[in-house]
Length: 36
Image (cartoon, rainbow, N blue to C red; front, side, top):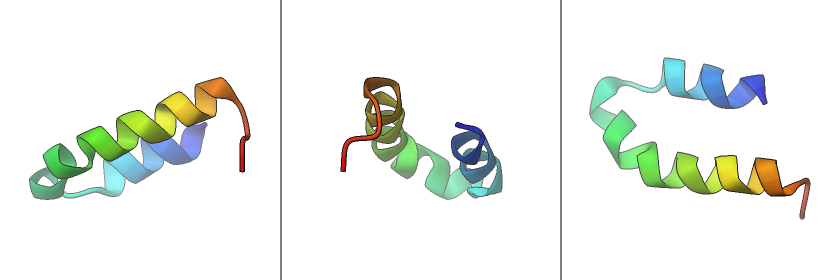
C-alpha cells in the first residue's frame, strides 16, 4: 500500500491531476484485493 503514497509523492504536481483518476482506480483495486 505504501507504493501508492510513494508514487504520488514522486509524481510531479503537473502530472498529479492527470494521474488522480488512474490512482483512484489503483486504490480501489488495492482495497478490493489482489486481482490479476
